[in-house]
Amino acid sequence: MLDATLKTQLQAYLQNLRGPITLIATLDDSAKSAELRELLADIASLSDKVSVDESGSDSRSPSFVIARQGEIRGVRFAAIPLGHEFTSLVLALLWTGGHPPKVEAEVLDQIKSFDGGDFEVYMSLSCHNCPDVVQAAALMAIYNPNINTVIIDGGMYQAEVETRQVMAVPMVFKDNNLFGSGRMTLEEIVAKLDVNSTDREATKLNEKAPFDVLIVGGGPAGAAAAVYAARKGIRVGVAAERFGGQTNDTMAIENYISVLETDGPKFALALEAQVRHYDVDIMNLQRADRIVPAPTPGGLVAVHMANGGVLHSRSVIVSTGARWRNVNVPGEAEYKNKGVAYCPHCDGPLFKGKRVAVIGGGNSGIEAAIDLAGIVQHVTVIEFADALKADAVLVNKLKSLANVTIHVNAQTTQITGDGQKVNGISYKDRVSSEIHHVELEGVFVQIGLVPNTEFLKGTLELSKFGEIVVDAKCHTSLPGVFAAGDVTTVPYKQIVIAAGEGSKAALSAFDYLIRQPVDVPAESVEEAVAA
Image: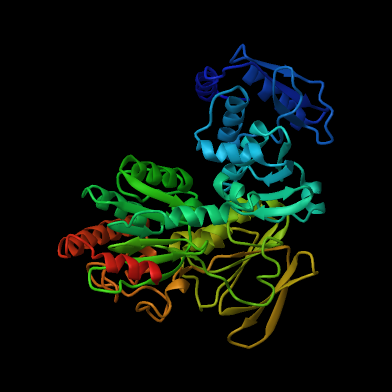
């Protein structure tokens, strides 16, 4: 089951076990049970602290529980956790065996204080967004005996997925009720469970001293800005919804100079690790609500956060990036995660053998269609323009596939459903004006990005596309406020360009700071706080 390389790596990891653990398996005569039996045997052969017990009797078979020796509870995998979930398996083994997680003590204390609950996490082994959620749910079950967690491979338990209308992963149920879907960090899940966390976070933000440079957004632009600013020896903070930004949703990165190949989540972790190497105050799970300009030249800019907290800084760099653009037709919002999806790598396996559409004929859309064609029964590509806009090599590959239909000059008009899930898509032929309807089970939207600037409207100058207007040195229309990355008017939305712009913004912010008075007048602080 495990090749020699994985066995060597796993054996090294298992040396960190502090106590014995038991893998309690529920198996049957199926081929999947045989695979799981082989995997568990391989794991047990690599450490004398791991044993296998095949006396399990769970309703999901095959499955297994990772339990401390002498116990029968722990995190359960109704899956063969390889692929993207192999790391989740390794961490669950280590945490159950007493190896401490790299989690703040405050977060662990929150987990231990929860009343409990039954969590079911649906994932797919090809989903790069799922491990964060899987690992968070596993950790909660390991550290709180009142929490039960089951990790379920949607591809293995297809009938269950159909019954529960799981059409996007990761998807989490708590006590049989939908708890959340999409990528979530441990901190996000804990904050959602802890009803008092918002007020505490706001208080913590309000108590922070003013920064020299405050960066709003933690993608490549924000991370680069933080590194360049921190190396100047000034007080730097980063307030981000999720560190890494869009890179967390990127499957493969092969064009970042000096890095031959990596994936988005790894890249995002590397960004945060480098920023943490410096004395930077990182404030995750923070969304900006508005920016209030400095009351006097050289004074403090106030950044109001969605949780009610307010941060102050002598300069601000906005690097809030962009998000997937919605097609904005009837049915899209109603059937999001019920057949309408945005990540073919994550959700594609859930549509195995079904019919899907891809809206968008650019590189991302055609790459998605090619990827899906190897999984689903049929792919319909819908492109508004009169020709596909993707690179010729991708278009030629797509046209060579027998289970793909392409419609150009096609305007999506509606995504239809039966009240529970998607059952079709309608489009208008822009030449004949005829309306056509295609029966299918899934729609993947791949039509580009929209900048995250809603909170800035009326505050600084935006382009007609909602991007922050910047000059060659990343200045915005507000003194002391700079911007960088995909959120700006700078062309070509690429990781390497965003990182370069973030570095430039930090240098411009520092240049601005050294030309300001050394001491900020006390009345500036008071006026900023009042604002």
